[in-house]
Each structure stands twice: as C-alpha cells, then as structure tokens.
Image 1: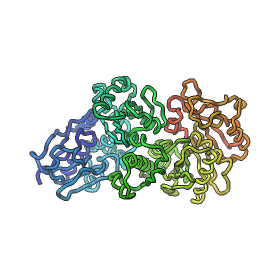
Image 2 (image 1 turned 135 degrees about the horizontal axis):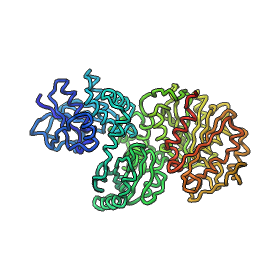
Image 3 (image 1 turned 45 degrees about the vertical axis):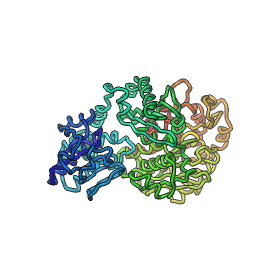
Image 4 (image 1 turned 180 degrees about the horizontal axis):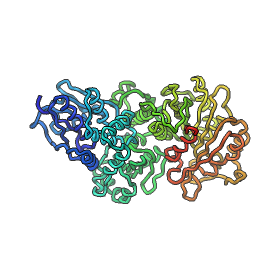
Length: 614
C-alpha cells in the first residue's frame, strides 16, 4: 500500500479538517502511510483552532489521482461533495455522520457512519477501539470540531455521545471546555469582511416544497445587531438571488451562537409559510425565533401544521437512523407522496429524534431527582415546538429526562410514543393535541384521559405545566376530573393562561382583559366566573406557579394575553392552593410564543419543580 490521502468535503469546516487530521494520525499509529489534506483553505474558525493547538493546516488539493490512488473520506460520502476525480480513486474507508447518497465503490471498504452530531466523535471511538492514545494537540482539534458542529451543544443534531466526547477531549487537550468553546465560536463569526453575497452563500441549502422552492441561508454570530445593520443590502441581495436562481422564497436565519436564539429575514413569497408555521408576525420582513438554531427545523417547520400528519396518515418512527429516511419511509408505507408530504414526515421524525435523545442524566447536586413525571400541555395551535426546545435544554443540563409523548387524536384516542423507565431521572411527558384548536371543555376531557392512562401505568403523582389555553384546560381538568383514578398533581404551572380574557382564544390584534386590582378583577368573564365557583374543588395540597409575559411595550401583555388576565385568579389561588407564586418574563423573551423557550422561564421552572431543598 502506498501513501493514503485522507480528507473531508469541499468548502471544509472545522470537522472536515479536524477529523481528517485526527484520522490520519490514527492511521499512522496503525502503520499506514497516511496524510491529511483538504479540499479548500480553512475558514477563520478552523484557523483559530489550528493556531491555538499548534497544528499546521493540511495542504489543499484539487485532484488526487496523479499523486496516489488510495484515499479515505471523513465527514462526507457523496461524490459531488468530494474531490473532483473521486471516481478514479480507490476508497479504502469512510467515517461520516451524514446520510449515504450518490455513493458506490467497485471494491469492499471500511464504512463507519453513526447518527451523532460530529464525525470527530466517531473518530474518538476508533482511537479507543484500537487502544491508541489521543495526543493533546489532536484532542484539541477534535474538540474544536465537536464544538463547531454542535454549536457548543446547542444544535438539535447534538447527542449525549458528542457531549461526552467533548468533555473527554477537553481534559486531554487541557482546556476549559466552555471558555474555549465560546472563543472558538466567536472566531468563526467575524462577518465584517464578507460581502452580502458571501454571507448568503456561507451555509445555504435549497428545499423544494410542493410547487415552491425555498432557499435557506444561515449565518452564525455573537451579535445579531451587527448583521441586521446591513438588513437592506442583505434583503436586496436575497431578492437578486430569487430572480437569478428561480427561488420563490429566500430565508436568512441569523443565529446567536451564545443563546441559541435566531432572527429570520424574509424575501419573496409566500410569506404565510413562515407566519403560519411559527405563529409569528413579520415586522420589517423579520421574525424572532427563540431556540431555533438549524436550517433543518426551519425547512420542515414551514411545511404544515401539527395535525397535517394525521390527514396524510404518516407514520412516526423513533428508532431509525438519520440516513436513508425517505427510502425507509417509502418502503414502510409502500406509497408515493409529494415532496411536501415527505417533508412533513421528516419534520415530525426529526422532532422525535430530538425529543427521545440518547444518554442518561448526570445527577446535579442542586437538583432533586424523583420518578414523578412532569406533564407539558401546549395551547391552541401549539405543537412539539411549543415545549420541545425547553425539554431538550432541561435534558442537556441534566435536570429532567424526556421519556414520553402522548398524542391525543381528534377522536380522543391516545397514541403513545416512548416509555416511562421508572427511574429517578425527573421524567417529562409531552402531550400533543392532533386537533390543536378545541374548546377548553373538550381539552380538559382529553387531559383526563391522559391522566387516567398514566394512573393505569402506576403513575400516582405528577407535575403539570401548561401554556396559554392549555392552562385554562388544565385547570378545568383539576377542578372537574382530578380524583381517585388519576395521579395526584403536586405542582401546577400556568404560563400566559387567559383566565379572564374578554375574547378568549380569539385571533385579534387587541388585548381585551379586565384590570386586576388588590381586590381582584374589576370585571368577571364567564370563564372567570366558572373558576370562581369551582375553585373550592382545587386539590388542597397543590402548589401553583402563575407565569405571565410582559413585552414592556406599554400593553402590559405578552402580545396575546394581558398580565391582568394571566394573574386574574390570584386571590382564588391564594385561598385554595397550598402555595402560590407569580413570575413575569419581561421583554422580547416574554412574547406569547417565545416565553416557553426563554431562559428565564426555564430557570424558574427548575427552581419551582426540581430544585433540591436546602
């Protein structure tokens, strides 16, 4: 065997270069004459990592056949992403974490692909399997690759394996993981020297959706304002791209890598694909999307509403790897669907992959752990994105473990996904209503069905967290149905619940609510009057946290529900609950849809539900 060249994909990122360096070093240790090369120059982030750990950038190649015949690929497999003369070469090995497509070889080879967030995570496994120690410098570039690919564990593609690998590599490289991670991400977000066209092409993909073509570009930054200072020029460049390339809609996702929030800039039509999917209003062609860090989520978020999957009869598969999804889908259903239908399924599948994340909790000293599940109920027109980002963060921070989703179909039947493991991991259960706009009486009956199912599974205590009309429905359940054959609700959280709205659950620009005084609201709506009469049936041992959002724009509301309505039951809760607390999320994070993704709410929930008593 002659020299073997090892390389990542074109336009290399930190993983493409880092995995090539690490895998080439491993091959050398195993006695193979290997060299890491690159199909492009390192970007600023990668160059920062190379210099930090005293490594030299691999030389850049355009063709290889004249130099050697044998290669190994990392971080890619598709021929169109590889070296130009790849079809003339013998591929000895592939190590990758992407789908397998447009790939075939004449000879057998070693192929290692796993559904993790970074190829370097897999390369670390290969070192261990071969009993080879990872040198400190190599550990540093592998760590950098994981930080880059997972956005310091904030990306939806991140797995517990990536987190564990990063912690191990940081120890070998002798760096502080968080401190170095932030420095690396900042180094990769220097956008001042790039033109608008360059920004739009840094990380962009096209998605066919029914009869439309949507172009989605993503830019990572530590300062959203720096990017949007160029908004007019960026929008003009996006419109030019639409004309030149036939895109119907161009979306620029600008992500703050420090807090995982994003701003979306929109150019083209149909804009309702965005506004309907994310329940946002575009202001000056922009929308705030808290907790959204991936083009993939955007692409599949704009396709359909939550109950679209039931109209199509699409399956839910939670145990299939990320490669070959479309092929597997067609094989499973033996049907043909449009591109839109496939995207609907992919969106749902991807949400489930995120929800049923791998790994076990690393117990934290400040957290009280038990087997009591916390049940999450979304509001009108809610879906898995209502609480999904919050639940994922809670698991990543080792506070609570995502274990089950219960889907209530339009006829009230329950579809159970996942399983409670009866461990002291603070399990969470997400409840989704397929028919997401239903009166609170029907929803309270559905919640009762969920609770009776849990009781049959020997769940005797729960916490209940609800948002918007889900709060109204949940409280009605507690007053009408909670009893001998349902779990005892220990803690109840109502987030932005319209307990005294004059136009409850109405889609209106106005905020109608009676003013709340020290003696209670100055007026009582029918829903408030019901609660006033029924509150005596509230379970006596229940602890209540009432949460409201205030945009601080003079409306005293979250844009949909007034603080006067959210806190309207204050005196009734104080009289009948074991304890009662109020909490306000202020500013943009307190928006009606944004509040469930806010860091402030997460911190308060941890304190209220899971904090260990001192």
